[in-house]
Length: 236
Ligand SMILES: Cc1cc2nc3c(=O)[nH]c(=O)nc-3n(C[C@H](O)[C@H](O)[C@H](O)COP(=O)(O)OP(=O)(O)OC[C@H]3O[C@@H](n4cnc5c(N)ncnc54)[C@H](O)[C@@H]3O)c2cc1C
Image (tube, rainbow, N blue to C red; front, side, top):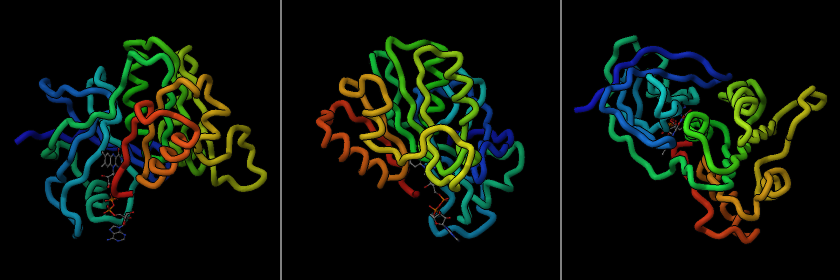
């Protein structure tokens, strides 16, 4: 039985927390992979049981393992909010093929909401090992306050000449001072804003409906299936 020891949590956006775990010495993963985490004991009833899958949000070089999640009313999430330091979580994995690819000359990452987690890991990794080409991150959210890691990506963009960061806020009140993009994520938006979209490889992550819609739109624009990689966060 493999376990992770819980360190603590912090709020990283409105309604979103990041949990930290000690990284075992033999814990090896590729940026973008996920783990299945079992809470030690459910404190509140949950018809789906004590396990959920989460992408590892930290990069492989970091000394701790982070996951980030939207808080909800489910028994699992309410239990997470009350977990005590030192608790042991059984886990399965790391697993998954939605991983960083350093060989790509042009990658476009498209994340909806908490679908940002694999890209947090991949970009942290890219910053350390570098990349051959360029990466554009299109990140859709309701508002800046609900956007996990928004400030971090602004910082990454300053440090990494290969990174172009385009956040889009879709639920701002009229008259808000936000000067950036406000449209929903779409293939049109990607082709308009991301350099070289015609030849890029797309990475899509978010709720299943979003991933499905974007995949359809990209295919309609003539993007080959081999140039679309995706991860659906089932459960949202
Ligand atoms: C490969 C993969 C990677 C993933 N990575 C991430 C990740 O990085 N971060 C992340 O957050 N999620 C991730 N997910 C999704 C995650 O596994 C969960 O499905 C998701 O977080 C929803 O879990 P939940 O417990 O909040 O809601 P669920 O229990 O699945 O319920 C769905 C909805 O019902 C509501 N609900 C449930 N029970 C109650 C109740 N008793 N009363 C009122 N309302 C209720 C909840 O508010 C929730 O919105 C990933 C999934 C996959 C497959």
